[in-house]
Image 1: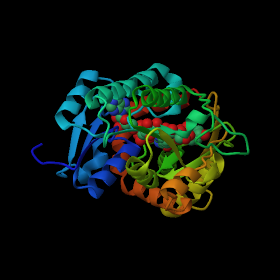
Image 2: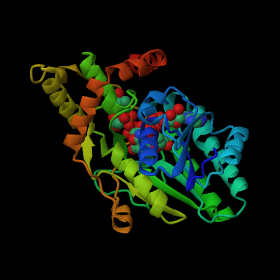
Image 3: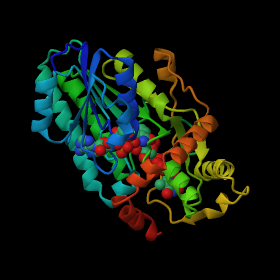
Length: 355
Ligand code: NAD
Ligand code: DAU
């Protein structure tokens, strides 16, 4: 703590999927910044995700709950944060259907606690301060076959998860309008890449294909998602944190829409090739199961604002990104085994057995 840092940034949820990519990028790119990662290490958080940077001089890990006001307050005292990049959340739609209250507690209450503590600590002295809230395109609801979500699309959340994220977005904007807290929000589409917890579509399918287990496709597999390489999202977060305007929202997306069933077939083809299986072998594992209740049909982000105002664009083609992702999972079976032991098994039973 004796070293003087140019900036001191609190990243919440830095041991999760996207958060770990954000922490890694910031720690490596800005040796003059102190990056403090506050994470409760729920089932989704894993310090193995950050093994490569855990010894860096500008990195600190703090285990704890964002909804614990006393703890967050004491971290502000200790580290004198001038910025917050808030990613900690319950993030899985299916879990939100099983237990909505946990999503309200973490995503809504946790966000308000962070806002409150930042407001108190900064005491209206907002020069050089920023509260960045990382949100999702799901707050906009579901699209039909046409159209895109823009920053002015009205919120229409339809799952307990998206309702909790929409609520947290509203609180962030309310703190801006009421107390002039310098906030910025981004709403991103579906991420994919390394360290993605295998409850989500892509890593779950990779893991099941590898283990010759059924591939549970919800409904008819016709729902559409817009996929973005997680490292491109991390780059967008870095850019928006530094260059975005206070009180603004930025949509982040991959311009890359896929029907679930087409994506699962593509994964099967890649895995057949990588595992030396006969062509078509993995696709035989596809099993149509009962649909997700209230399943949103289509998400598609218009990221023009981020492109024209801040010059961001995705760097990686989807097929190339998927190949890299599959390679990472095949080379990191120990990580997969670790995160799928214990609680994952009972979640899997509850979620898929009934289907
Ligand atoms: P994740 O589930 O992989 O990670 C969440 C992290 O938050 C975990 O490390 C977990 O331990 C931590 N956490 C949970 N509750 C906490 C609490 N009470 N206190 C402190 N830490 C806590 O999530 P992700 O997919 O990396 O998503 C990160 C953020 O990005 C979320 O806010 C999510 O809504 C948003 N987002 C995700 C996607 C996506 O495709 N995954 C897309 C757009 C936006
Ligand atoms: O759009 C951004 C959101 O993307 C993020 O805010 C969420 O945190 C993230 O989890 C993700 O939500 P989705 O519900 O779109 O992702 P998921 O991977 O759970 O599902 C993707 C699609 O695949 C969706 O249409 C449901 C379907 N699906 C999912 C699973 C887990 C299946 O068909 N079978 C499955 O087993």
